Length: 64
Image (cartoon, rainbow, N blue to C red; front, side, top):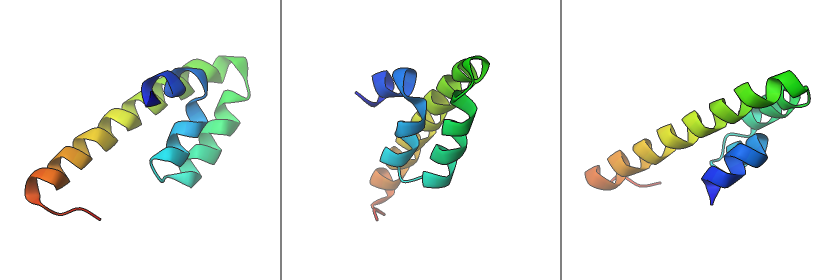
């Protein structure tokens, strides 16, 4: 679900993964039509990094 959100509304993904400042910057980036594609790529990349971090934390038993 977050992947679809990352493609349609890239800025909202950052708020769901608790990174509000990046979300605001991404919103500013995607306000331009040219910036929409880089914003979507950035959101998908950040989402993949977030999932990797969560897997590492789960495997080590350290979860916030």
